[in-house]
Image 1 (tube, rainbow, N blue to C red):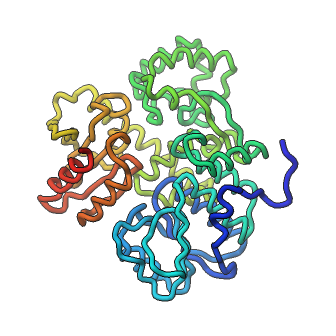
Image 2: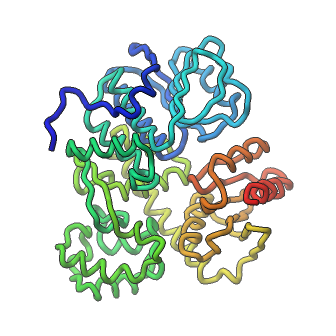
Length: 443
């Protein structure tokens, strides 16, 4: 481990990019964050630094892509607060209308025509690093902020080599300083804080076909791995190495090859967190972040990052548990009774009529594509009574393209993840509009 610097270290690869930012440290701030997982964590880092520095702020959330008018109106409604926008893009060519207001935008691409608007165009994986450097350069930063910045850069891929130069640097520094660690092990949600049986019965990140939600199969798995009954009520991490190896050997043959890296592989840990904390391991953080976005609860997740490890964390864990049960039940219906569904195919689009909440359908659709319950090269549209939930493979559609086109069409929507969106069926023409957009984008 390296000797501690007097001040948390600079992330060199992003420092020059942020050099032009001029912040009046004695201001009160308006933090406008997108609902994406990286933006929530970046906002948490920023808010923690402002609290530490005795600065006042108001935090609010919008979709990752909004109209210029929506963003302008929001900022102008807080005339006495200095706005910092995180991870928000504008869909139209209209510049922001902020009169003489200054603004800092980190990530995203809001249109502007004013020298007072400082836009720093960054990848989503770099948002946490940017927030850390803003706090480091202008307020009071701690090493834990750097650890969170490193974790933020891993949220989407789990691998710094698949992100950016900045992400790789942040992770390397955090590892060198002993702020985070990495190991190859089981990555199933809850391995360090849930009873062993519950880990597998409620596993949706990842969903393990034949195991998730199947009590008989779970008990058979434990029998095959020679796990005693007393150990089945304890967290997996309390097993000895031989027991964990036996369990892995029994488990992996049940796992779809495409999702093996989600079940077993490299996991990162935040060493300032307690070992039994749900926020200790990257794999659990990814799962909770996915649940938060799908349920449109960015404030819940960000509140946990700011420091509420009591009420808000309990609320987030309960939300995950409740959603896991609903998702597993719906996946079972989709997998076992798919022939009974009214399914249509239009080009590369599969349409299934199914009434459930958009959060559940988003997660079910992702699982269905990952496990090939539905052709994984097709766009999946769940048609419910009030909305369409669209889930797509990354090979066919790109997040910003589809959200931008839906917004330009004037449709009411909410993003659920980087691969799913819910679109309201406010008019009889809404479904036709959506299918037309999907067909055009996937050609």
